[in-house]
Length: 90
Image 1 (cartoon, rainbow, N blue to C red):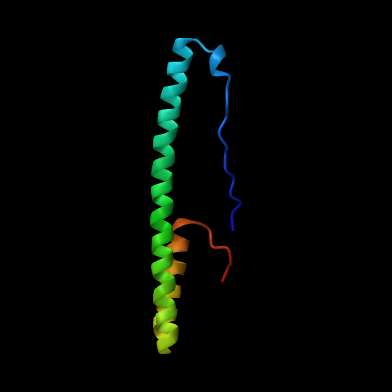
Image 2: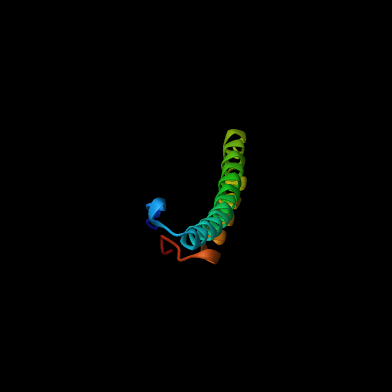
């Protein structure tokens, strides 16, 4: 699994900035906010999909449907292989 790095917010002394510098900072913050909103949406979609997958697998387990579990695991494996290097070489 890859490491996750998160950049925190930076602060500045707004009292020491000119009007133009403040405008530049506001524009930068608006851009950063939009990027973070898109990223948050993408993460929310992934979490929702993973929760659905887990529910399907638990339901299949409770029904004793090993074929459905194997199929879902294969789909997850194929999804991962299509997007990144597999963590485990077969």
